[in-house]
Length: 401
Image (cartoon, rainbow, N blue to C red):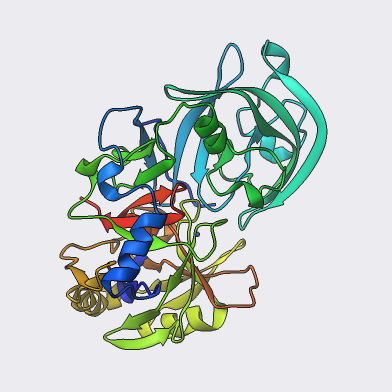
């Protein structure tokens, strides 16, 4: 099935300027014909009308947006509960927080789990390692009671970090709660979403995100159903390439109706743990050249900016691009057109030495791949309410309110 995701390219640049999540940086084929559609509906047991919209074990947690860079939320571990701020990450499967026996400098700036203070704690001898785009960690697997708001997962396996590198400057979150499929877990532990599903804590195997723009409050993650107040129109369902990762087919990336990347179809990872849109270096450089972005180097990274004196003409280019509809292929082989009439992510830095510069939210994906792969992070997901449907191995997208 061919599903079309047509990105208004230049729109996704911005200035750096209900468990609460805070936003933190750290990510197909056309269905035509009645018989094909009927076959799909038979195979997918959860139709849109069957997904809970409010009530019936639907748990909604408010999220907090940290500078349009990442979203984090509160969870508790242990008995009595100890509270942590974590990134709810669809790009990974493991759940971990710092341990009180971690001696890395990064651990000293975060809340650490005091295992001796929990009466339900159980340690194993299994160790694991994870490398992220923003850092790496080594940990040991343990078990304890984990709470996400009203949701409780008993004897939940999770990781306790004993070493952390690269997380020193990220004091706004302590750990990561992965929401991807179990097969990509580095620790081999059952992800918390699977445990909640198996223990009957959620009525349907779905979770969803609404990520706010600019405001710290207002973002939410919901489990077990969907609240329609957070989006407009209907959900457009996109099937996964494989039923083991949140990866979909993307047909092309265009600018002013000209294809500039993903010309022969490519893969797109829908990742709430990544703030930007990431792609191959050659294509990202091409995009930056087209929009006139210039590299700006710092000690730790390179950002691409548009100088203040170019903002007026560049903003006109962005708004012109936004006047084109963003199209999503629907199962009945029709297009649902969404006019993006508001400024999505264009703004000025709120302070510091970078005042007056606008930052591109296209970045290089440093993880090599045999196929052209893009990561659709929070800058994309702020525009679209997203539903992750494990029951049907698909992602639903609708224009966020």
